[in-house]
Length: 480
Image 1 (cartoon, helix red, strand yellow):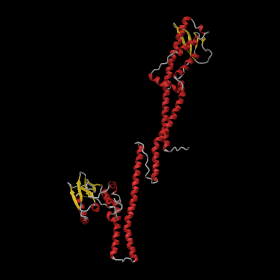
Image 2 (cartoon, helix red, strand yellow):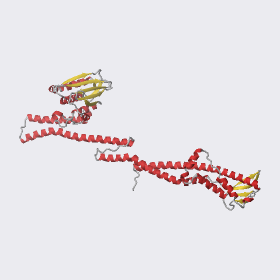
Image 3 (cartoon, rainbow, N blue to C red):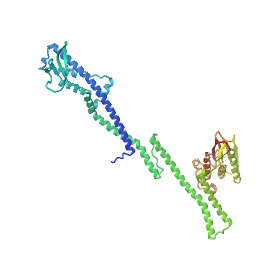
Image 4 (spheres, rainbow, N blue to C red):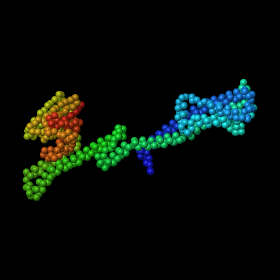
């Protein structure tokens, strides 16, 4: 299997394994240093105790027998050595040493085995010699370098106890290293295994995200990545799911917008083509009345294109100027006069509630604001019951002016409220252009209001209809 070291999996795995091994090595060598030093120190104490006991036994024997000559022909000296070294106590300097050294005894050689090795080394190699350094008992013919310990009685040297040199600190370090290798190997295998498992667990959301990205590339927005918990990577998956949902909504809106736009453009174009074809074939005469009909369809197309330009790029068509807040009332009066004939035909009455307390300055394009009010009034006329009221309120807060326009319905379903400001959106898709308009009126209102740094929202009205609320901020500039 080929390993890609540039992948995130390989990098995380190497990082985990490297850090784990580093910790294991550091802990191992720190333990090696501590245990080796403490074992060396405690073995020294053990040897001193055994040596003193053996020398005391030899002195007592000399005082009873007057010499060591009787030790040549029997194994009494051997029994003395065994009794002294095998019965010597091993004491720890600190209680924690008992816990540490006994806990590592399972590595293959426990403390008793080490002491047995030390005891047998002294029992098998130590010798007894006379005051003239003549070997009396013990293995006298080996070439091992010995340490002579004088045996004194009443201030007189009566002989020498020859002991092998003490084991060095490096011996204990080597011993610990050799017998810790199995556990060291086990720890490495466990750490590598855990690193692989942890890395795979951490990268599971990344793999899911990779699959999700491929789904988005294939425009499959229905795929939902599983979210297991609330960590950062799973939050990223949750964000992906939200983005995928938004893209799905956007794609649906885009298709619907193209379909609606095609319908809006097709209707006047079909009328124009039919009239021109009829005049071309001689079915209809070319006269002023017929040309006026064609010109009306062309004007309708021109208006639709202008409305689309405002919706797409309102900043190019909105000219903001610093004006008094009174211009909002003036703009509404102009819009009301423009819609008066349609209001009379529909038998609708507009009721105004002006609660503007003081004059403020705003950045406004009064002409575009008139268009907003005309669109809102036309929307109310199209979807209000006959012989009812349209309520318009002008409110003021510390930093904004709020305009509320509410009709009596029929209202808009809650599920449609988030979309009524979208391009070419109609609550009832089956409506014709004569009853439903082009579907751009509220979209134009939103584009113009947002270009004024304001907000426009829609909610269900208290009278069963639709309530549109416009919020415009005051400016900190001085009125012109």
